[in-house]
Structure formats: C-alpha cells, structure tokens
Amino acid sequence: KPPQERYDIIHFHLAMDVYLNRKWIKKSNALIYLTPHSPELAAKEIVSDIYGLNPNSLWSKLATYILVNRERDVFSQVNQFVFPCTEAREPYLLDPVIEKQLSSSNSCRYALTCSPAPILKGSVKETRANLNIPIGSQIICYAGRHNHIKGYDLFVNAAMEILQEDESVYVIVLGLPGVIKSPKHSRWIDVGWTDRPHDYMSAADIFVLPNRSTYFDLI
Image 1 (cartoon, rainbow, N blue to C red):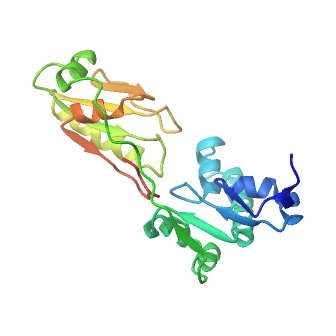
Image 2: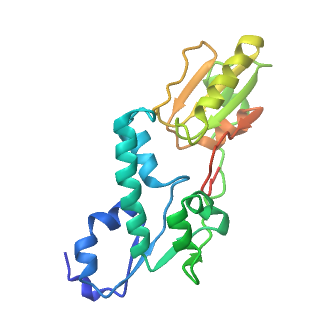
Image 3: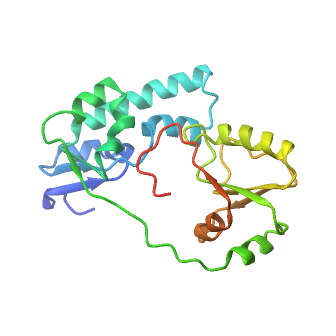
C-alpha cells in the first residue's frame, strides 16, 4: 500500500473498514470521511444478516454489544460524515453516543444519490406471461433484502393471509434469499436477484415497502 501520508482525505463506505484500518489511520494526517449505508447500525446488520444469530440468544447480545461499541468508536474518529440527505441520519440518531457525534457542528455533509432512469425490457403482458401468471390476476410485489429491518416478516405474514383469501392474487418477490425464508406456495414467486426490477414492479398491481427503518431507499 502507498504511504497514507500522501492522502489529504480517505473516504470509507463501511464503518468496520475504518475499524480494521485504525492502526495506520492513526499514523496519517488525512481527514477521515465516512458514508454509512445501512438502515440501522452496521453492527446490528452484521449480527442478524451475516452471522444469522437469533436476536434473543446470548451470543447475539454479546456480539451486538462488542460490534456496536466498535462502531461507536469508529464514529468518534471520523472527521466528516457524508449522507444523501438529512433524513438518512435518522437510524443513527437513535444511538445516544453516535447522535452526539452527528449533531456536532458541521459534522455532516450531504450528496444526493440516485439510480438511473428505469428502462423496461419487456411489456407488462410479456412479464406476466413469463411468470405463468394468468390474465386477470392481481400481483403484489416486494423488492429488497429478506430480513427484519426491511420488514420482510411483516410482508410474508400479510401476503400469506391475502393468498389464502383470494385465489386470483400472486406474489412476486425480488432479491436474494436472506435470514427470513419465503413460504412455499404455488402463487408465491421468488424471482431472486434481477437486473430488471422495473419490469416486475411495472407488472404488479401493488408494490409493498414494509421497512421498519430506512436509510435512503432508491426504490
């Protein structure tokens, strides 16, 4: 790696990367910028999504305690935080230690982000036909990670009730499998990861966004 002293600013996108590089960061005069991207503390995401620990277990509580304190330490070392908008700070303001850091004068800057304009690769009729969904059916669509913070459990429970009550309804789910499993049902379609989410959203009658907390959801 080139000597860190050559840099005026080092911009990180993961708090844990700051932590892992903390020793050589201390040797530098560079300003440390951080853009967090999670809808909750990254420490909590690591425990639930990567470790897959039961939130009520002792191991989960211990891991959360250790990683949250590491993340707090990281936030105390950062010179400048970069968010897409002021509202994106909200999940982090819930932590009293980090809230104090983010609320200090001139600690945050804002750079609006976006996704490219949607380009449909197929018509609504073609998308429905490719999924073998009969004409006249109603489609409910979800897109995102299959975890607690995204409210996927809320979506599963509500959607299953609707499927049981109305045989004309189909459910389309976009996104890779996660810690919360999708139910097995003949009218539940797990598309998985896709580079054409707009086609499926356009083909749906209802799009559901059940987030418990959100950062800056491009959906």
